[in-house]
Structure formats: structure tokens, C-alpha cells
Length: 315
Image (tube, rainbow, N blue to C red; front, side, top):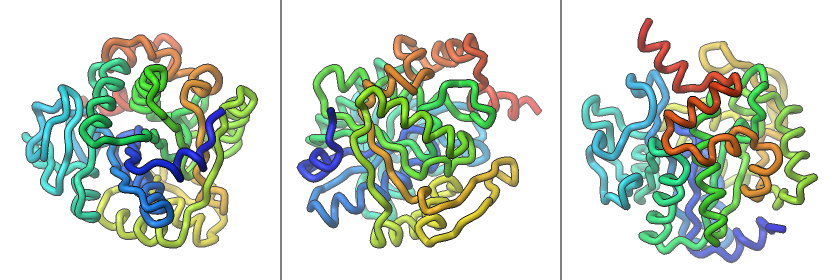
């Protein structure tokens, strides 16, 4: 059974990756900061090459050849990003570039286009380049643990592919820890649904611990949300400050219940998660590309963020 406290305390160079695209890297930053301050680690944060509409007008993630301003390629599907890393054609800066500017350090970008196995290889290459000794895959909200039939589920694809890749990396012997930051703060799964998924993992022996957002981390998070367009990663700040009640995000399309529990991060064993709650990640683990993973989810009756972005482009 994994022990998050022991893993986080002993890691000297943890890599914390926001797995859902867009602003999940901000949530990764909120976890990385106490690892630096409390444990004296040198954490690196990262995310994926998938910026959500309307930030990036093109559907899906960007391949490395579509990206300009990279500090250094790390294999065929990952790179080190700096403050000027952007989509070549449009000039759109990645959230990870904005975070790199904020903290004055390089961040990591992973391209999920070629499916979980390629993601595992990309993460392995980044880990080797950075000399990282722990990988944390962090999802803001908890939709990475979705079954697929939740009414509010809107963006399951990127989470599923990255989480499945992380499980493959864990099977190779790399210490990998899953994390949900800000349960239900993305307005997709309801809080009770996230709790039910966490309970499934717990029943399988896969819950590794939990931590609360700290004051210094909240201060850095506040600075980050001023620079990075993200609503989901901003909600744990409201929870940390004691706000309670219902708010809306995504232009009023999503409701979020704010409570002190929204400032929580729950840690889990990614392999146990795939065997229990994370049915969509389990379903796509053999997919050879993002498109194939998308087709797998279609067969399960799941509409994805890639579908929504393509539909928006056609309007």
C-alpha cells in the first residue's frame, strides 16, 4: 500500500503533472510548493499540450512540431517549456509557459496524441532528463476517476489517457502517485460522486493519504490564477478561505459546491484506481492513439472534450 506522506517527504526531485490539460498545471503548482517549502525538494511541474477552447482555437492537443519556443525537446512527445513556449501558428502561450514565467523555472509539456504507451514513454524521458524520483499525476476536480455515466462529465479523454500512461509507468517500477486536487471543483462530477469513486479506490486498498492546501501554497496559487486562465484550479482558493455555497463556472454552465473540503488533495495508487473507480482510464489503456481512445469512449456512450471542441469549430 502506498504512503503519500512517506513518498512526498523523501522525494528530492518530484515531477508533478496536471493531467487534464489547460489550467491543471496550476493545481500541480499548489502541491509542488509545500514540497519545496516543507521538504526541501526541487519539484518540477508540468501539464499537457492541450489548451482548451477558447484559449486555443484548434481542437485537441498540439504535437511537438506545432510548438515554438521550447527550451528543450525530451523525446518525441515531451518537452521542457519556458516563458515563451507557445503554439507556433497562433502564438497562444501554454499555461505551463505562464507558470514557468511566474516561478522562474522550466516546466514540462506532455503530448497525449499517441496514446497511453507513448505518454508513459514521454513521462519516462522527462523523468530521466530531470533526474526525478517521484511522479505525481494530479487531476483537478476528480473526473479522472469517472465511470462515464455521470451527468456532468465533460472532459474525460485527456485524464484517462494520461492516467493510463501513468499506470504503465508504475508497472515499469517508477514510483507514481495519483492525486485529486479540489474534489468536484471543476463542476463535472458532483462531490458525492467524487467521494464514491475515492471510496472504491479505498476498498481496493489504494488510498495513499490526503493533504490540505497550506497558506503559502494558497498565496502562490492566487498569483498563478491571475496569470493562467483557469476557473477549476481557482475554486480551492475559495474553499481555503472558508467560503461555502454554490457558485458557477464555464460561463454559468457548471455549478460548483464550495466547502472547506474543496481545499483537499487526495492521493491514490494509480494502478488500483484503474482496477476500481477509473473505468475510462482502464478502457483506454491499450489505445494506440488519442483518436483510438476517443473511439473507445464513444463505444461506452461517453462524449469527450475532443468531440465538444470539434463541434464548436463547426458552428
